[in-house]
Length: 193
Image 1 (cartoon, rainbow, N blue to C red):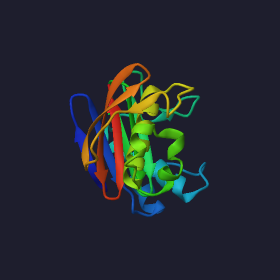
Image 2: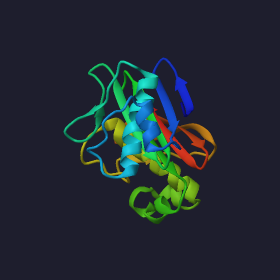
Image 3: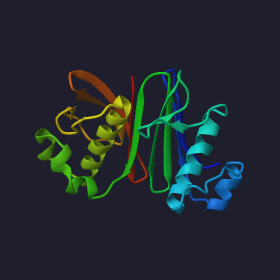
Image 4: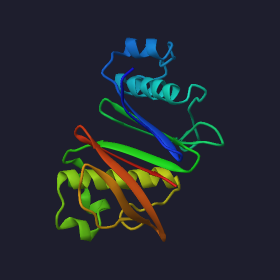
């Protein structure tokens, strides 16, 4: 097993799988799941590592996808999945949930004007832009509705950048608390409520 981190509370259960194994090793761990419908090696690793992690967290669950491509497990449980480089993150909850993981790099900084509100621009860094992006992605996955404007509909309130914490977020007229943590050179954000 390559479980990097796992956390279980009354509200949720999340895990992070670090995949530095070969495709053939992942196939063995997944009891030879069929990944032949996927062409790219990266997608095969994501597919297999997601299912290995889910089986570790709950051996009775299997993931499928709805017509919009969002993951589902059953009508009593919510799931959210995110991949970045060799990490797979997954969260399960009885409440709506969203998770996102991103490597700290200049990509979010380069498109920051499209999703970051003015009050965060004065002290923006690559690290802060990455965290803001993961928060907004986690909120988007949590809400699972069309037509969300990342800049107008998801407003991250003021916060001090740390290695982990909780940040208040205004989604339309609703106040939401988003948790985050820094793992290696990546930020993971999740919401569950």
